Image (tube, rainbow, N blue to C red):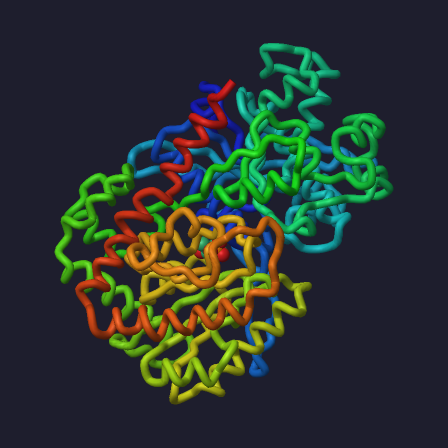
Amino acid sequence: MEWSRFTEITRIAYFSMEIGLSQEIPTYSGGLGILAGDTIKSAADLNVPLVAVTLASRKGYFEQTIDSHGYQHEQPVSWDIASQMERLPVRVSVPIEGRAVVVQAWLYRTKSPAGGVVPVLFLDTDLEENTPEDRAITDVLYGGDQRYRLKQEIVLGVGGVRLLSAMGFRIFQFHMNEGHAALLTLELLNKTRNLSAATWTETLAMDRESVARRCVFTTHTPVPAGHDRFPYPLVAEVLGDTLLPFEELRELAGHEDLNMTTLALNLSRFVNGVAKKHGQVSQAMFPGYEIHAITNGIHPLTWASPYMVALFNDFIQGWAVQPELLVRIDLVPDLQVWEAHQGAKAYLAQYIKEVTGQKLELDVLTIGFARRVATYKRNDLIFHDLERLLALGEGKLQLIFSGKSHPHDEEGKRLIQRIHEMINTLEGRITVIYLPNYNMDVAYRLIPGVDVWLNTPTRPLEASGTSGMKAALNGVPNFSVLDGWWIEGHIEGVTGWSIGAAPTELHADESSRDEDALDLYNKLEYVIMPLYYQQRQAWIQVMKNAIGKNAYYFNTHVMMRRYVTEAYLQR
Ligand SMILES: *Cc1c(COP(=O)(O)O)cnc(C)c1O
């Protein structure tokens, strides 16, 4: 096997606990991983010299089934890693509980239709040399307890750097996509003390500043509880002080716990949030650090329905490698945009018929809502006042939901149950559909096939959100609380519609539920439904604006160019 063509040039190493490239490689749970996959694909399209590092996650995240009580159950995902990528012969070891745990990698080549290739390394501990317990470290994404998570993060951060080095990669920037990979900084510091191993550094003495000069950190979570923390007694047992004396670790990673975010913040030259607003919220969370903002995106060719791909190919040649060209969407006749959309809707209707047996009417306004099911996302907000919903929507609305809850999130699971209750409660009056096991395949069918994409999180807890960008690309306007990317993409009545007040707060505001629901109903009844049913031409203009004023900009090509110029190449 030949990987030398990848090591000939100096690269950016992109570390992510999860990467979602396709449903055939189910090593992701949701937005963070799919963003990573889309980033890698755009890097390949743009010939950005990147190498990505993640975990093999041989049992994936989980597969969701829902029982007759609307309750979620979880099964391991079975997939065959060997059928998707090739095993590399290189082996390194990492210190875990005093053992030398062996780590090997699988190589996947992400190929762009434009010719670029980005190698992705999937780290794996399922090797004969390891104990049965150690073999399972790279099994379940976000599974197990804190000890299991810490072991995974040692494999990712420390194992990843060691593997890149052993393979001969020369890395000029390490990008941590979320804090999970922050232990890589310790290995870089460790290298400074082990000069003979510092093959890739021009400056052999890598002190904190030299490490920071090489590191970029993207934070994704505006919820303090969402940041990984490990108690030092656990760190002492699992990692020990082989990489760094504890005194120094405490200085860098926090005095109470090992806080992965603090560690990454202290050892990165460039730190960013994933939307303008999220940058400000993160700045308030981490005073004393300079936090930039680079808004997330989606990979256009991955997320456009086959109907839109055909349409764009006909009218906007080159759009897939240069999605900025979608700004020219007004070249396309209205009727063709409408027909492409109705094609995607019919395709979704067929899928729904197969999965739930329900019938989706093609001429009834259909609202889609799919994302992780968690309290702050308020997935059930549209059911806040059933009388009002029925009064405005009976016979004139269809609602489609999808989404998983984290296995330990009982409140989230109750939300899934509540939405399932609505299927029966509203039957015959408003069709409610729940598509089980939300994943990339489901998203690919669902998002382009609905007429409006709804999002109702508690502000300001949606860091960016990306499903709304997938909707916009397919001519599906957003109807959303002003949070995350939508603050930047929203022009009222032009690209879509807002729900609730203007975004001012920097901390969670749970009090707006009644107000937000009222605004949601009013806009549906007085603005959105009349436009859809009575002013089709004006409606199609909003669809086009979603493409020409949202999708042309909110994509990973634009995002990648920003990372290159604002983060990787900045000095
Ligand atoms: C795009 C996508 C997400 C992320 O969407 P958000 O709007 O950020 O919640 C999550 N899961 C799947 C399967 C997706 O395709």
